[in-house]
Amino acid sequence: MSSSQRGNPAAMPAPGYSRPAQVNESGLVVTHVTEDGSSVSTFDFTTVDCPPDLLRSLVQGFAVATGQAGRWKSAVSADAGAGILRRFVRDICEQDNAPTRIEELGPEVWWAFRAAIESKNRWPGVINQTRVLLADTPGLPDLTRRALRAKTRKPKNRLYVAYSRAEFRRIRVAASQMVRRGQARIDFNLNTLAIYRAGDEPADAPTVRIHGDEWTAGRLLDHMARTGSPPPGASGTGRSGESRSLLNLDGASTLNEAIFPNSAEALSIGFLLTCERGYNPSVINDLTITTDRADDHATEDEIHVIHIDKPRRGPSARFSDESLTGNSSKVVRRSIALTEQARETLALLGHSTDSLLLYRTGKGDKSQLAGVFKTTIAQMHTVYPRWHKVAGLTADDGAPLKVTFQRLRLTEQVLNTQPRQNTAAVSESVYRQPDPQTHHEAKATILRGQADALEHAHSTVAMRSLTDSDLVEAARDPQKLGQRLGVSPEKVSLLLSGALNTATGACLDFTHSPFADEPGQRCPASFLACFACPNGVATPAHLPRLVATSDALDRIGSAVTPAVWAEDYAAHYARLTDLLLANTTPEQRDHARREVTDDVEAVIDKLLTRGLDT
Image 1: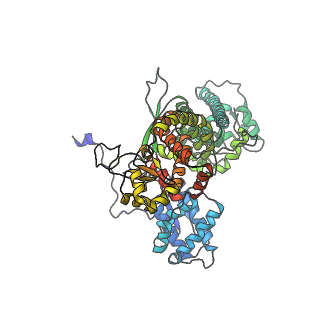
Image 2: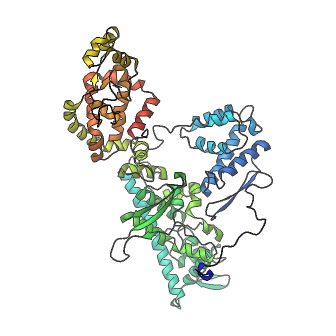
Image 3: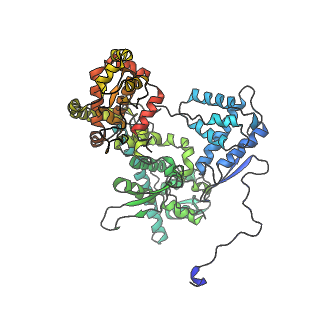
């Protein structure tokens, strides 16, 4: 291949080049550049009230966390991390004997900070983010680093629940109406602009006088399309109303929004993407218009293939593709059309972008046009009131209905029973199982499955049970119980000591399982199969584990589809139910529930979600 065929070689840095310093000479100003170089942010901590030595160390940790190998690579993550640093400094400096250097930040400082946070909010977000900051801070004492390893668990009960089906439907309708309204406004004005640029604007078209010059609707729109803003003076006192009368501003609050979507319409697109696909804000932030089409563009329905980037998944699973059809595809098409003029204008201004979502702020500064959805997620508290005012939604109980991405994402998974941007196990255990609406809607499924499987369980349950009196007698004469169970007295002693315990009961012969292919092979079956195994034995000491397993299966039954429940869980649940009903009273089961520990629940949850598979 000739050199002409190979193209021009890449330009190399000049001799002596080095990467610009991320932290300035003061050690208090950090420059953050996103992975793709599309966004550069400067974080200035010089005004933070904190002992200088301690502050410089924490800022260095922030620099590492936002660097090329850090956890906070995106602009949104870096901005949130800066807020975490300021909050941490503020809180620890209010403690008695507050540290002045990083070496003085002992574990007692961390535990006091953590306790204060947990007393106000049981969700571990702030604690986990602060852990990221401190883990990258040089000079932190080893004892404090050990204390950081004690991770916080998310609460079993969410701080919020899913919307009802009716509420979810009202949210989708309201968001769709805002998008369609914005699209109609922009299309109308762009049509007016096209007529002007083609030279077909009527000679008697209405005008408004601005600084001694006459402006038609087409001329105003042409200026905005080229510069991103109305001409100087168009929005001044007395002129704004005259200029507005020339344009279609339905759903808009300023002239800027004549051919550009506003923040509420961009937020509506975000809500719709979450309703359709369960996307979280970080995914929406990075969506671009570089979608592929998997249809023939002519006779088939649209199929958009979009490219997902989730850095937290790690290098091997970070990037993925999704094919969107039906309503999901329509949302993508609307998003591209709604923001097309914004991208064209940005390109003319020297700020080319392929971001899917753009919006025009109400400010006159044209640089604000570059406010992509990615940079507004952290600032959406200023947009939500406007959106809710326009939507005017009410909840099922008549109260004002507040919409958040978190609840929408939860609701999408609860109602559609599908994992979204997570594993099936996480979708079931974290999103669907704990939600009360899931339990309510699955009652019929559970009852039907129980009825079908219970009769079969009566003839197939094989796990044997022992009473307290059986155990007392066995302690005096293990041979008698051994004869009853068909094992040696030594095996009875192991049973009584707990040495034969499994996740739910005890196993008398692990290497002679009826589920194994060959004699002497280790039992390959799920722990749920113990309820159908003659080697399985349940004693009163196992009751808390059995009740915890029953409750865990209840939660799973409320989350999975009827087909999955019937195939994977119904028979096991029925055997366990039969075992409990035949050998315990409701009072005994309630008492056992109070004895279930977090460790037992955690192990059973991991077993049910295959979290302990090797």
